[in-house]
Each structure stands twice: as structure tokens, then as C-alpha cells.
Length: 403
Image (tube, rainbow, N blue to C red; front, side):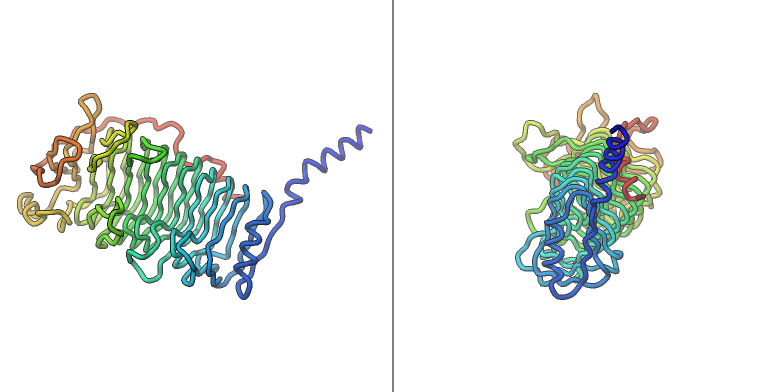
């Protein structure tokens, strides 16, 4: 009897992987129906494999099953073409946990590219989202768009043409965005109202603004911070802003490299920041009025450490830019600060001494730029890098890719 029970237990222990199924999808007639059916009928542990080719889709897709992998034949090999999409929804919406998306592309979705909402422990690997007509206000807002989640890994992805942010992570925690390329978006990479994030080894170019770390009022999750921005190449972000009017990023000046607004404990180091003609680095308080008792509009403990940066800005997209250039001898120093502090007990902004800074010398949150009194800024030096504790995507997500 004990031998039979042991054998039965062994069968049960091995049943989960044995039952996992592979759903293979081919391009061509009926591909959309077959793909959406697979996304609906998949069981946890299943893999949906998309063969190489171009899939012509007229509607968005959705996945609501936990622990499913959707895998293509490479971001150039498997292309989901949403040019003829009806409506304005996402190309793919994910609302389940433990999902892995890898090795395929989405082109010309009417809304966002891939949105995952409330989807914990999600992996985006080698996903490409492109609006093939280039920068345009009618393009979808976000390319890769995880929101309201814990555990996010974005790696080896490419996004271009988003009218808000190419890679956007919002209201989330335990985040890594790495080894990705963001070009020709309004914002290349944006971390918003999120904590415990690492943005590293990305190439960010030809956007309006390169990397943005924002905190905004009035959202379910606020008080973003604990963010590391390191070892990125942020170069030639000089595309005129094409965001639809009213979007928060519509106010980002052309030529912004790395911008921090109203966050706490942000470490910016080891980046190559070149040819960003308004400001290689910009640190600001939130500029609008707000009605949210939870919200702190000031940047706090922002460190601009050792970075490979050029002499600064030579063509600022700012009111009175020519006069500013003349006042500073033809080049604005690399760091632009609005001058608004978070209180005497907490340094707003610290920087390595060799990087020059200038300030708008504003004194209160909400002041207009017309009240600015620009001048050089003498910033305090930072101490040793602080201990961020647990930060970045969980190790399990890395291991999942290796498997």
C-alpha cells in the first residue's frame, strides 16, 4: 500500500508540468480568432507560440489567465499588425499575474501597444512597439504600459512613436527597465508614481525628453521614489513635443535629457548624457495647483552623481532662451533646477561638484516661469551612495527568462 501511495504522489507531483499545453498559432486567414481563442482557453502554465510572419489584426487582444507565456519568433520575425484596428483600444491588454511576453512586435495599434493592469510579476522581453509613420499626435499614448502592479521586468525591448511615453511604468513597485531602446517618442522612458525602480543600460534618443521620473497628484497611488537611473545612454533627445494638448508630458521641453519632478530619493549616476539641447538634467517641483492631501509636490534627495555629460545646453526650448544663453556665455550649465526646496531638513538636490548647475530661483510651488530670476546654482555635494534596500524586479522574473 505504501508503495502504491508513493507512486501516486509522484504522479501528482509531476502532473502540473505534464499538463501544460502549447498553443501554436500561424499567420494567415483566421489568425486573429485563433490567437484570441488561445488567449481565452489557455490554462496556467501554458505557452502560446506565434510562428514567424505578419498577423493582420482588426481588433485588440486580451489575456486574463495567470502564468501564461506568449512567445513569438523575434521582434522582427513575428509582427502583429494593427494598422486596420477598429476602435481605439490597446493592441494587447493583460490583466493576469505571472505572464511572460517575449519575442514579438506590435505595429500601429490605435491605442496603447501592450498594457498590463494589476498584473503582478510580468515580464516584457524583446517586445517591439512601433508606430511606423513616426512621431504624430494621433499615435497611441504608450508603447509598453504596465500599471498598478508589483514585480515588472522590461528587458531588451524597443519602442518608437508613442505620443506620451514609449516605456511607461505607473503606480507600481519592484521594477526594472533595462537594455531597451526608446526613440521618437514624447518621453522615452517614464517612471511615474512608482517606487523601488531601476532604469539601467537603455539607449534613449530622438525623443522630446529622454528619461522622466515623475510623481503626480490625484492618482490611486502616489509618493513615488526610491529610483536608480544608471548606465543609460541619453543622447540627442531633440524631437519637437507632439503630445496631444492637456497631457502632462505636453509641457516637457524639446531637448530634455533626464528629468525628475516631485520624487524622493532618486539616484542618477553613470549615464552618458549628450546633445540634449535644453537641459541634460532637470529637477523641478510640480507646477500646477492640486487638491490631494497625500501629495508632496517637491523633489527630495535627488542626487546627480558621476555622469559623462557634455558642457550643457546650447539651444534651450525655453522662453527667453537666447537671453539665457547670452547670460551664461553661450551654453547653459548641465543641471537646470527651479530653485524650489523641500525644507531645510532635507536637501532637494545634490550633485557631483564638476557638473555645473543653474537655477530659476523660484521660491514657491506653482510660480510661473515669468517670475524666474535665473542665475548660477551652488549645489551641495552628495555623500556615499545610500542603501536602497530591496529594489528592482524580483529575482524570480530573471530566472524565468533564463528558463
